[in-house]
Length: 438
Image (cartoon, rainbow, N blue to C red):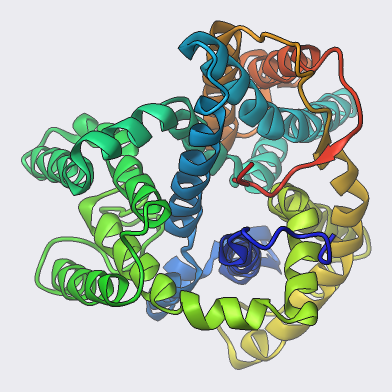
């Protein structure tokens, strides 16, 4: 696969995707601090336990990179789709169906697995509170997919917005996000949820700018420097917290709902990374570096979706043998000294699991003669987004056979609809990553 890569492909897109997913995985494993004491198992969050670790989120919070890569991918793939000369309905239907299927089918397996686990545990009389905590911890990553799906639905509109207004489309989203933040700080807390649209759309537009050649070299460095000044000012002089993810018990969050501080942070992060693009491409021209990138991208969805499930199952297995490895008090010197072992064990368990599950990332391509309905794709995307948001917020536990029928049913129905949308299919194609370009 590495040898067959087209010369025109931007390898840095794939590299950033691989690098970012590894940062997410390690960050989640590092923040989680399960501790078995005399009072039972405690799920301690290191960001709350040791406030100094909140600065580490400036390294491990890489969702802005995912959304920027998504903006790049949406731009490239949408323009390629338009070039086929079909009507808007045919173009949008095929484009959206293709992209929603890449997310829906692998996610359906995860949701179905946890629904089965939830029903099995309920039948054995396991405490519903434990099922909720465990499944919520495992399914937290799907919040990103819930938001990213919405960005995918409006992706073509955002590409057109750039073509008409250029940087104005980015500024407009930043201005809207700022107005929402002002409303929140004035007491209208519910308004903050609008920033799931405005903040992530702004970051998406940085990816569109990248695809249009407007974020290279000196322009990327300028963006990084300006954004760095803004974000440092917002978290030191301004009212925004230092952590770029949510912290349990904190009065405010930059992530849920997202704030203008996250836009500035994302712009700083993206600008700095794109300033290194030329050097990185020279590195990625070497076979070893590019093959490693291909390897991670080949199982990237599985790594992202399943890494916390593996952690939860490992903790459960440890409890069955007396809590081996869970008795070290978090934030102590011993705890920090054993973190490399903790991460190494989880990585050893997760990589083979992800390699096995990666086959699910192989999705049948749409038939060239197929004309998928854009309305079905939109309905599936919305249903999947709502279901994943519910699962990320409250886990799998519910009143019907031990599970929540709405939270589990919507993703499963969406996955079924997208699976059927692929008929008739031909040879399997491997997805090009969580937010891969076509």
